[in-house]
Length: 592
Image (cartoon, rainbow, N blue to C red):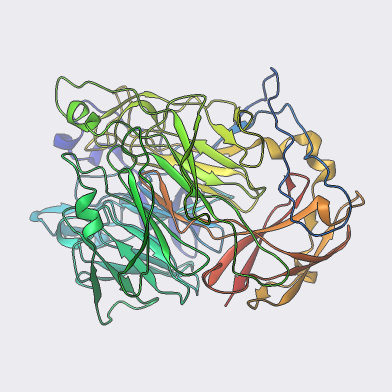
């Protein structure tokens, strides 16, 4: 029985004025149901291009013995793009990679049809307009290998919500818009699962809030439009006792155009959280609401929505002795001026140049100041991802304007690699550009094979296609330089059946590998990465852990699991073995 089909002629005409349909979704049968697959003709590739290689020879070795550190393997490969799906049916405003290697992404439910239609028995009246019936999918589960699409149902609007993976691998999604600002949703990774929803689960409205897992597996959910508080949400529960904490810092950081939404939030190795909003940051005790330390202001502009810069917590180097005293640095890049949105949101629109600075701050040193560098290009609305080898990829976004519908211009097609351990002045490398603009409401994810899934972009109120920056339903994959074909001979291969996948805090575990090169401890890193929830240019709960190593050969590695949930909140991680900058494909591990 067919439950999903694409039929452009049924799209509501009043919502599609001036638009045209994208290529149809291929339909495949599975267990008696039909699901769409984009890109039925296979992917195409853009090859590497030449030019000088600015690869720094920095290395991220721990201080175990085992020989003099060797430089990372070099390559002139600047990356490769492939088109993975011609039409996924739903634009990816929010995206979460699940432990089964399927990506769940979703859009708003209250702004008209998508390009993927449900069977009529799934139609629903819009909660904010019961006279209108909606028969379109606004969420999908996307197979990152085959491009198969399974539509998912939402009853309440997840527009500009927050989220993260629970310790058991479920997606916990909080907040949203209109009737769903207090909603809590859970989704389990299975072939027939659907979202479970509680429209009134939270204590306050959470629209444009950020979410971060804490050491015990609960989530802190911070901020939102016109909300100056945070709350703690226990895992895997739709109903729970509400714990609300006032947060005056959010009121202090709000300016005329907000610029403090989707704040940057990270759990630190001592269990406190780093919180950055607009241009200010603090360290906060999430369980008491106490401000532990105020940090220096970041000059130059605003960094959070709608100015929408990028941020990551730089990789955490762990030791074999289980110490929680870990050097910690944060990176904040791009954004725009505090008043940029004032000019980009209304006609005639004026698009202020985005910021081109990149700033690091040590959270370990008491009196540290921000250290500024200049990026190769300006960027607003970009995504920043920590790669398995500890480098940072900056991708998507624009060179001018801000977030919001139609508020950005001059798409930034060119990814940039940032190498935190290279000397200052040699940390940036410009990579192969795409030809698809990824503007407002685009998202990306690191995949288990080391590629980057890139999808979404809809700077329009409705699905619109004949404009400068159309609704984007194509899905790409980007291969970073470490996937250069000439590096394959140095790439470790994890033997999963002979490796430990269930980890215990502070305990040794074994990873079995195949690697032709002879190695010592200075040649190898083992890294762990929890797949973040990515929306509006911020990947929530993102971190990379570089583990302490006891024994290393080209056949077997004995590593030490992170010491506690403060360093590694419980749950599923992708584990990689990195040989002088060249990562293996990953293996899913679980730590409790």
